[in-house]
Image: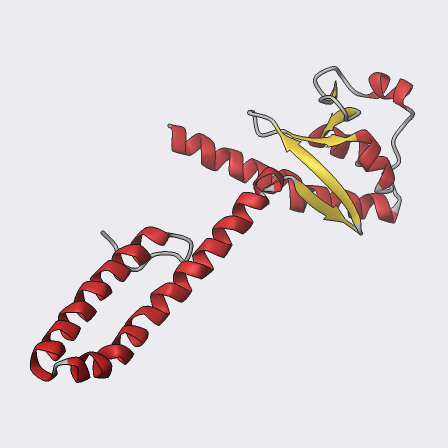
Length: 180
């Protein structure tokens, strides 16, 4: 068992607390046997010194755990491009899907909804879950933006590759390699 762990793992901290408690109780018992009640008073600072670090680490790991639980549903889905929030879904194949309406709000020039089915195949454009509009696959969007000469479109394409597509591919490859 490795004793040097990450901050977010409370089990080694609890083991450390139990070991420190046993050590402090042994010291307090010996001091009480030798000096009586005065021995207990003189060993009180030992408890404070022994428990301050692990208690602070336990509190910090608890806060970190709560933050991770609160943000779990947005983990890996929340992206911001030039002040516009984009929620991006990833399927089991590692493909990223973007909401067409969110893309338009972010300034991406897309054809009207009726023309989207002409420009993209059924595998690239799908109806989103309840409450969301149409979803467009990120690689299809990138392919459609490649011919544009607009600087904003080029910046968005570069951002899409660097911040969304490449990290999603790496994550998918990592998950896939762990399974095999």
